[in-house]
Image (cartoon, rainbow, N blue to C red; front, top):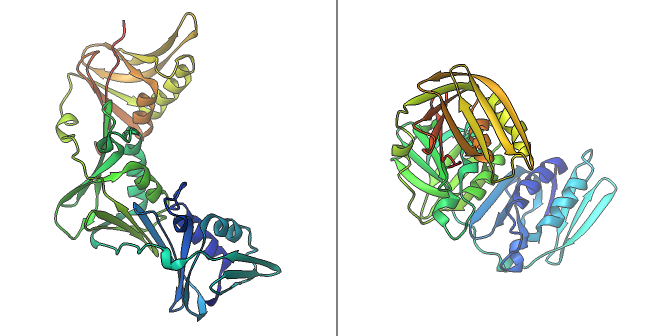
Length: 360
């Protein structure tokens, strides 16, 4: 292999692909990045049997080839290279030499013949704005469970019906869902994607449009010259829609950021599992937490109440996750102090049902 390439393009692509390298690879070759040079382009790939990534960048290829290099070392080297000169890469079966300006690195190769075959990209079923999709993932992901013994709860459900795409997640104590408009070109579908992997994918999408594909136990995301596949979770998801569509007897409108700021401040005196109490009245909500032996705090925030005044308590982080996912006005629907409360964005595209805490 022999080629010339922009070092900054290589560094960006290698850094993105290296995020897919497993922390503890099941076989040594999975710690590598697969480098393929052909047709005036360079493909950089990684695979761990659950997720695969491939980034393509332009290169002046004198001699095509395929090699496997230590992934994290390559990422560090590429990051450190000067970017005012072009990078020359030459490789033999034993090593790859990277020369950029006056800097030169020689990296040993890994046995490329032992590297597993990457999955093919499945057929595209629709496309969506990458920024909107990434934002939606960040809104619902906090509600996903982290207990790997309950795989269903560790995923984000993606449902497509017509031009509506819905993302949903739950950990049994809350359910978060976000509706999006997208451009479908296939039949309706529903799939469960591991939340951690989907978060990483969303962070690397960049701007523009992302194309979503569905295959045999796989889903894919393509944004520009970057392609990712992820293996789906083979589990049933709960019927979340019926739980986040009911009309409550008590409804509050409040500035989400103002209430979140107050909750975050008052939660300083609340231990992680201690309740934050909200007392809603006609024109304000009193946020309070703590106890005499650890300290107490309270703060009021303006609001509008329709229905009877109510006092209700939540785990502080669940409350903050719901409020931080909402821009502008949050609408909170409640049916009693011991029943879950439904947090909604003003445009109703985001909903989060949060279990209240029983307190004396």
